[in-house]
Length: 96
Length: 395
Image: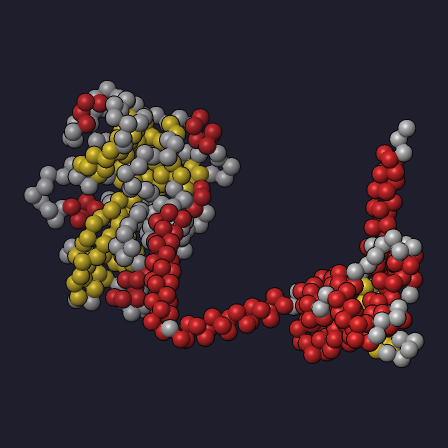
């Protein structure tokens, strides 16, 4: 879900995805590159994201991932699920 | 459409393997370089930065392998590799390979043989029209059986089954057949048949022993069988004094008549009596009786011609088998009218076909028992196995 959300804004390469998640979550979520890349390949295999070779700002070749239509649908589903789950957990946690 | 997309991706991973590998390589190298740059910016020297980056990633080759696993391509590549390896090992030890192949071949062959045998015995339906609506008629008497085991009493060529509910058997006297064939509300047609054993057949001056079956005039029409050539035996042929006619099996037609299309009217001798062939049964037809493979009847004769053939043995004192109520010699099969279920068969009660005590065979102890008829499903033909009749229904 985090990866899908991150690439939903604009196409990003793996390194940037990891950094972005870390940055937005104020370093609370540390993304291991070792597990990020297999996850990216799995998501591509599922058809939720699509990779394309392109040059970065520094002119280097990298693989940029963008969200597909199926990926967008999946993201919405997972966001809704997460909202439901987290509000439920919150409700229990804040029980008087 | 997702599966289509997946299929395309997977095909791409397989077919343009080099391209995908290159992309993976570029992708991971970029990751490594980015990590090194970050480490350099944090103040490490180049060697330190490189080692730290590799450590944090956990090995490029390992990561690449994980990515490939996610693509599920490795499975196929590994399979091909394993198969090649298996092939090499088999080629290296030909003795072992030969033993394995031969035992597999024997095992598979034996299995196939057993199943095709069981299929023909247990599963295959009669090759006739709507075999599910056929029933055979069995007689049975009430009575208790002390030993629980079903036994078969052989009397001549007739078997009596000793089932839990009393005695039962599949052969009936001809008058019983006449009782059923006239206007039954349950059966749309009723026909009778009887094994004729092996007869001497002469075709074009060549003699041979041939299995034959006596059939009533309704036999072929009742089974819904269309002859391969000519016409079937019909009711007009099965009368006392009618011209003796015969129907050949498809096999006999091919072997002895050369498959000639105008077989109708060919003259043959059966036990030295002249018969006219009128038609040919369709290929694969073997009648409702149960026979060993290869022992199917090759000749079908009208029931009434059996008196002509019996007459050639003047030493035996024959009764009139068509009026004698105590001569059990025909098997009867009926086709249920559409919509007639088991309940209907139960409710329909026919008169006792024989309430006089049988005197000619050993079962005289059952003198005062009334013989009733029951029917059982005959999708696979009449069964002569030594097993209790399946759920008898009283008429």
